[in-house]
Length: 179
Image (cartoon, rainbow, N blue to C red; front, side, top):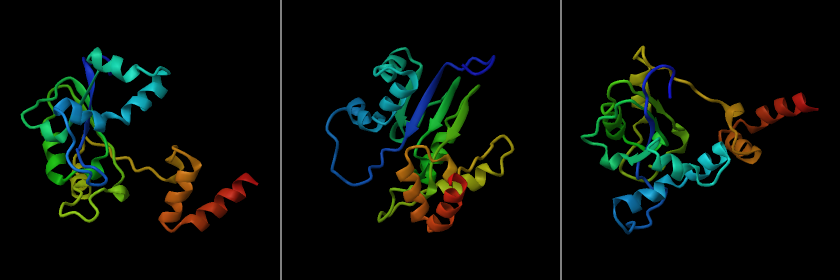
């Protein structure tokens, strides 16, 4: 999967932090995890141009999904780990994930520190102190994205720019380029 190395699959990791408390999810562990896997189904359908892509990749063992709730004691060998929505993880969760990385593995942390779902809770996002540590490690590359990297939609891009208080300057610059 990755050059000449023997990476076997992709492991997606997310925290089980809801944006709003809706009570307990019914069902067993697998059924509860399905709610957090939902965003990946349309992503894979779009990427592979077939609606059942995520299910096929899971069935073939090419993609694994886990929440941080069940990561203790796991060693992630020969995999690419994608830690998604890491702005919704505590430092303890991020620390737990990185210390699960085994031989011949790669890890990618994805998150937007401005979109934490910890607002109004006793817990805090761990992304800032965690990223400061990673930036001191030579084997990590950190990439910061800007407004030009927003691809969901033009409306979302404009909203985020406005929310950040930079809408007028950015909009003027954009309009002068397009007219």
